[in-house]
Length: 167
Image 1 (tube, rainbow, N blue to C red):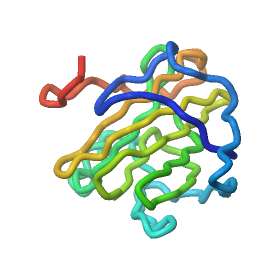
Image 2: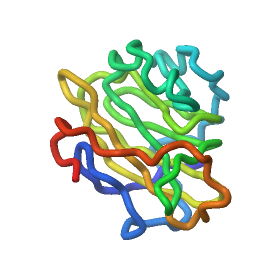
Image 3: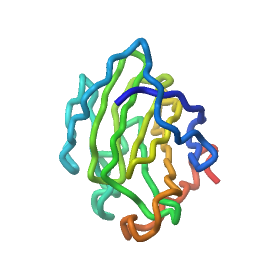
Image 4: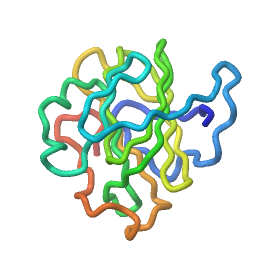
């Protein structure tokens, strides 16, 4: 896996208009092998507490997840959640690569800018995300290339009423 570049702003919903081509090798960083995350269990990945979750409403509503400054959600073209994604996050002194069987990846990252590379079903999306000083940044990464039949039947991710920049 290599790292790519992609532009987005906090709480921006990523869509098909963004780059989906294979990532170019980043000369400054060697590829990392992805750590498989257990569901709903905080796991240390290169010094960053990370969680794979979101399978059911109980796990999505777990109050522990509010302590994670970055929440990445993954959705198909019909906005149903998708899972089994590979995710790399790099920046501000942190670098991690994970494999998640749930539709959410949460990370306790320090405030700053990060590059995110996410792959589901052979399709890759790249983004620049910002982790806030306080609160939680939520990013929904859409994979419109994935048909509804391949997506989980979980409810579509909805914008939170108080999330800045959400539709």
